[in-house]
Amino acid sequence: REAWVREYAELWRLKRESLEANGWKTLHVEVKSQYGLHMRPSSSVSSIASQHDCDIYVHRPGMTYYNFSVNGTTFLNAKSIVLLLRLGAVQGDTVTFIATGKQADEALRAVKRLIDEGGDSRSQVVTYNP
Image (cartoon, rainbow, N blue to C red; front, side, top):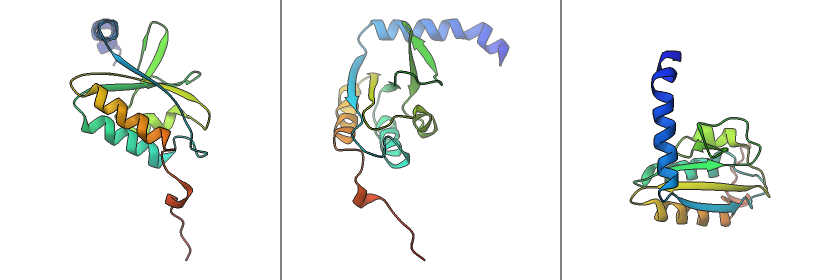
C-alpha cells in the first residue's frame, strides 16, 4: 500500500484537483430528517450516485474520515454506503456534494430531492414486533 501511495497518490490528487477546478457541480443541502443520514437515506444516496454516469463526493464540516482533499476541503465517495454512514451527518448539518460527469446535474437534483424530503419519514421506519 505504501508503494502505491508513493507512486500514485500525487497523480490521483492532481487529477481530482484539476477536475474540481474545471467545472465540478456543487450542491449544499441541510439534513432535515430527525434521524440524520442513517442507513436508509445513505443507501438511497449511494444508489442515486451509482445509477448516474458521474463521480459524486460529499463533505460535512468536522468529518474525521475522507478519501481526498481539495483546497483543504475533505470529501468521501458518495457511491459507498459504508463511507456515507461514516459521514455522521445529523439533523441540521449542512453537507456539500460535488459531482462531475454526464449526469452530474441529474444526480445532484435527485440527491437534493431525497434530502429535502427528509430522506425518509417515521412511517417508513420498520419495526419488529414478535
